Image (cartoon, rainbow, N blue to C red; front, side):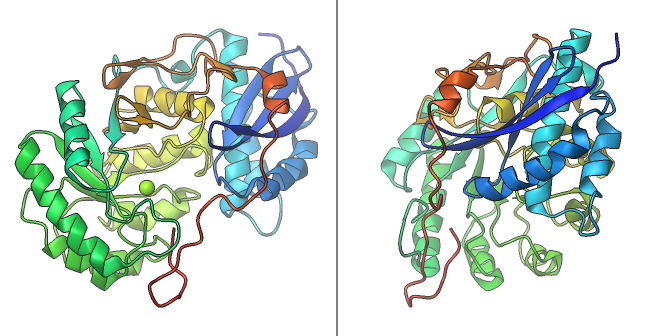
Amino acid sequence: MKPTRIAAVTPIAAHVGRRNLCLVRIVCEDGTVGWGEAGLTGRERAVIGILEHFAPLLVGEDPGRIGHLWQRLYRSQYFEGGRVITAALSAIDLALHDIKGRRLGVPVHDLLGGRQRETVPAFASTAREPDETMIEQARELVSLGWNCIRLSAAQHYTSDVFDPRTSIAETAHWMAAARDALGSPPVLGIDYHHRLSVAEAASFCRKMAPGTLDFLEEPIRAESPAAYRQLRAMTDIPFAIGEEFASKWDAIAYVEGGLTQFLRIDVCVVGGLTEAAKIAGWAEAHYLDLMPHNPLGPLCTAASVHLAAAIPNFAWLECRDTPVESCGFDAPDFFDGAPGLDGACYRIPTRPGLGVEVDEAALRASPAVMAPAAPLLSSPDGAVANW
Ligand SMILES: [Mg+2]
């Protein structure tokens, strides 16, 4: 393969479906183009700013030195790391893998060691507050072959006031009803979107009869491993944590301390495939599976599918376009080649690179909407609550 150099690095923020996507386009002197995506929805201006800081560090460099460039960007200032930086770094890392795969004519999973599996299992989410219809949606999913379903917490979709105690009482009732209705073996989980305190989360867990829930996602915020250590001692329900981790260093206490049983890392936040693969190896040594976060566009999905294909310790990939939910994240008007589903599993892409073609003109015709992305939730007494 003839050497080449990076010629240009261009951030693009576009409004796609119901949210903004923050992308980066890297062009090489030989004409190869690679695309990557950054997480941190709602903070596009900051991520674009970091991408603009990174561009001069990348132009003129060999795009094949992905690990070296990762270190250069992460440690390019005295104040290394942080979620804004790693979100931007993730996009760069994905684009560099895309470029390397395209230049070698191989899919990205071949760069990560090749396929460990023939297909990538996904989990589905019910798309409403808990009620009979939520159970019907779960039943439909099970009938269509989905064996891992994330149910909804009461008040999950509220946009103003979140009352943890009434949410817990109602959610506990419907979780028990769902398990009764669905029986075993479907894997059932729930995402509490880090809205509870330690005491509230413990209270919720104690209302769950043994065998009701197979995983509890983000019961509390993840800044404090010590808080999770307290909660871990109060319940035996497996935890699924990590979508906010912004490096291997964020993950270390959780993996080594036994604080989470599934790793929800996001390839568009944690530092791209380079960092995700390192965490996967670390998790493998502790018999922990990855359950990656995947709430963005087709580049995130494709990168996650390539990673899932290439690691041995993988459970399910989040999927938000299913028979019961349509978030429009596959966005066929903007992207060609988004990984498709066969039943409840993603097909593993075979095209070179990430395998996704991007319609740049369509993205530029749909600029990002720079407004707060998340509702500003309050507690019943008016204090700030997490969304
Ligand atoms: Mg979550």
